[in-house]
Length: 423
Image 1 (cartoon, rainbow, N blue to C red):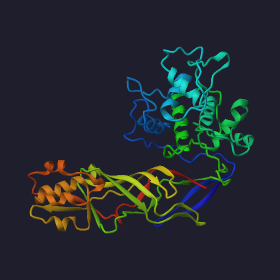
Image 2 (image 1 turned 135 degrees about the vertical axis):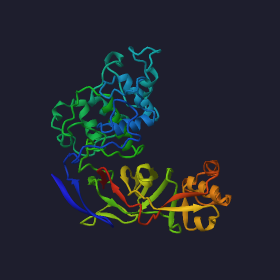
Image 3 (image 1 turned 180 degrees about the vertical axis):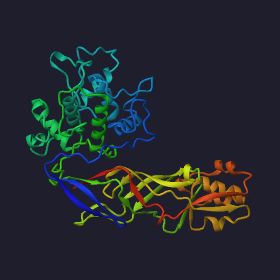
Image 4 (image 1 turned 90 degrees about the vertical axis):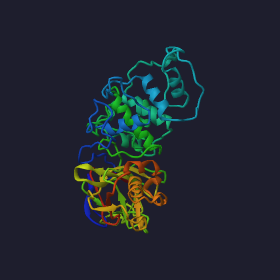
C-alpha cells in the first residue's frame, strides 16, 4: 500500500505518495525525459524509459553510440562489452591479482578491461579458466557484478527482500544475496514492471546503462535521476539501522526560492542571454505531519534561459542539492519574465547597476551603449568576463534588458514528478 500525505510549502499545498515499509511500488506517472538537448541518439526518443540514464552515461564517456548516430538500446550486451563499461565507470583499486583467461587472447580488444574487471572484484570467470567474453550477459550477472564490485552486502533479510519480485524463484542461488544488496541500494531498475526482475533475461544496452548509473548514484558518484522504474524498498535499512522512505513530489508543485545576495534587488539579462544562476529554497517543503521533504536552504542550480517566442527570460532548474549533500536532478522552471528596462546612450552606469546583478551579455550591452567600461568591474552572473562581448553592441544607442525580481519572479513549478529519499 501507498501512504498518502499532504505536503505544504510556503506558497502551495500538494499531495505526495510515500512508499510504506516492505513495498516496491512505481510512481504514478511514466517517466519524462530530462536529458539535456533531448537525446543525442536518433533511436532514443526524449520519452524513452532509459533516455536519462543513457544521456548521463554518454556525457561521462561510459557509453557511446554507433557511427550512424544510433545507440541501439535494445541490443544485447556481451560480457566483454560490460567489462569495458565497468572499466570506464568505476575507478577502483585492485583487490586481487589478475589472471589470464584461456579464451581471452592478449591482443583481444577488451583484454585490459576484462583483466581490470576481474582484479577489482566486479567480474569472475568460469571453470577451466575461461571468461566467455562473447557470451550475452544475463541481468542477474550484471547486478551480482555491481554488488560484488562495490562490496555491497544485504543488511535486511535476503528472502524477504527478494519476495518483492514476483519472479524471485528464477533468481539463481549464487545471485540471491548480491541482488538483495543491490535492491537495498536502489541499483535495480525494472522496466516495464517493477515487480518482475527477469533475472535470466539477457541484458540490453539500455538496461546496463540504467544499472550502471544507479550504481554510480548508490556510491555517491552521480546525482539521482527521477524514474518510476527504480526499485526502492520502503524499509531498506541505512547504515544506522533506520529506514528509507521514498516520497513523491508531484508535477505541478510550486517551490519558493530566493537569490542569496540580499543586497541585489534585481537581475538584468538580455533577451538572448543564457546565464548561470544558483538559488536557494526559501521555505521548508513539509508534509502535513511536519516532516521536512525539501529543507529551506536547499541549493537550486540552474540557468536563466531566453524564451524567444515570448521575448522573455525564464529560470530553468537543473539540480537540487540538499543541506545533507544529497543531490537530485529536477525538471522545474519559473514563469516567463518579460518586463524590460531600456538603457539609452547617456545613461549613467551607476544608476543602472545599483542594486543589480547583470548577466555577462547585459553588462557588455550597458558598457557599449553608455561608453562606460567601469561596468565591467560590476558583479556579473557566473563571473563571466564581458570584454569579448562588448563588440556585439557597438553602435547601439539603446538596449532593452529583461528585469527580474528574484524575490517574486523565480518561484519554480515542478514539471516532472520528483522522488526524494527520506531517512
